[in-house]
Image (cartoon, rainbow, N blue to C red; front, side, top):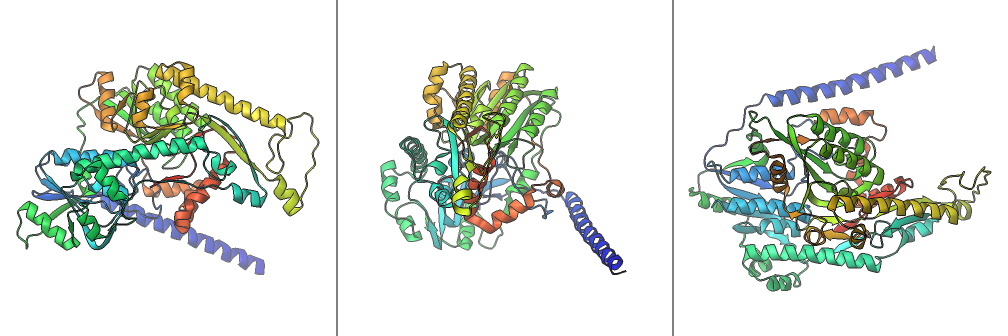
Length: 588
C-alpha cells in the first residue's frame, strides 16, 4: 500500500510539473501572439534615431543564444540590419539626427568599422550625430569618434591606450595534472595548439600577432585622426599618456567635446533640432525603426544572403555556430529556389572542423555548378575553415581589418597516462591483433608509429587545403604554401597576397552578386531563418547537450567562461583534423 501511494504521489507531482511547464509555455505563446497584434510604429517628423552599440551585435538579427524563457518580441538587431536602418534614415525626412550610445561596445574592429562607415554616410546627408556615454571603451570610442560632438559623464572614464593581444596558456596546468596534449599540425604559423604545448608564444606566432595588432591599430588611429582633426602622431602620443582617461584629461586632449550629464546632452540635441527647452524630443529606437522598413515584394528576383557565423561544427549546430548539416540545407534552399539568382555567403568564422568545412564547400561548388554566382563577404573573421569555405567563391570581399588566412590544420587530443599511473595508481594492459588495434585511448600514451600516422593525416589535409585555395584563387600551389603555413592576415594584406579580391562590406558584396547575375532589381532572402525564443526552448529541451545549461554556466563563470570553453573545445576535438584559429586570443 505504501508503494502504491508513493507511485501515486510521484505521478501526481510529475503531472503538475508538466502542466505548469505547458501553462508557462502557453502564456509565452499568448504573449507572443498578442504582441503581433500591437499597433504599427509611426515615425513622426523631427525624430531622432537612437543607435545603441553597447549590446551584443551579431551579423544576423537574433543569431545569438537568447534567453529561452524570455518571450519578448524584442529583436537583437544584427550588424547588416543596423546598417540598413542608419543608411535608410539618412534619406528619411522624418529623421533629423542620431543619438549615439557607444559606451562599451565589444564589437571587433571589422564590425565596428562597418557600422562606423554607415554613420559616416549618414553624416554626409547633413544630419547630426551626437554621442554620449557614462564610459567609453576603446572600440566604443572608435565608434563615437565619427560623431559631430562627443560627451562623457563627469564621473565617467575613457579608454584610449593602444591595442594588445593576450593568449592564455594551459601547458603548466596540464603538466601538474599529469595530462599530455598530443599535438600534430601543418603550418609553422599554425598557433591554435600553442596554449597546450608551449608556455608562451612561439617566435612565429609573435611575428604574426604583432603584425596583426599593429595593422588594426594603424586603422584605429588613422580613422580617429580624420574624425577628430588631429595628426596620427599626436594621437599615438596621447595614447601613451594614460591607462584610463578622466573626463577632464580627455577634454583637454581633444578626445571629447564636453563633460556633461545625460540631461545636458538632451538639451544640446534640442538645440540642434531648434526646439525650446520645454519641448520633448521624439526618439525612435533602431528596433522600432527597423519594423517600419519593408521589402518590395513585387520584385521577384532574389539574392540569398547566407550568414555563416561562429565556429564550424559537425551536425546541426546551435544559434551562433555553423553546423554542416544545417548549412548544407540552407545552401540547397538557395539552389532549389528558382527566384534566387545569386548567393552571398557572409562569413564571420574562425573555422573549426575540417570535415564539416569540406561538406559546406562542396555545396558552394554545387551552387556554382547550377549557374548561381557565389560572392563571399568576410566579417570580423574568415580564417582557416572560414577561409576554406570561401576559397572557391566567384569573388571575395573583406574589410580592411578582417582577420583571414590561417591556412593550416591541426589535430590534438589529451592523454592521461601519467595521471593514471603516477598520480592515481591505475594501470592498463591490452592484447591486440594488430599494431594499431587499440586506436587512440586517452588513458594510454601513443607510440612513434601512431604519431607518424597522425602527422601524416595532418599533412594530407593541409595539402588538400592548399589545393582548394590554389584552384579557387587561380594561384600556383607552391605560391599558396608560401603565404599559408597557418599565418593570419588582415584584409588589407590579404588583397596584396591574392587571398581576397576587394575591400568592401556586405552591401558591396551584394551589389557584386547582383552584377554577376545581371540583376537591376532584386530583394534579399536571408538564411538561416532565425527561430523565435519559444521554438529555441523546445528544441533545447529535446537535445541531449542542450543550450540551457551552457547559458547558465556562461552567466555564472562570466569572464572565466572563455577559459572553460577553450579547454572544453580542446578536449572535444577527439583527434579530428581542425581548421581553426587560436582557441583563446583576446585583442583589446
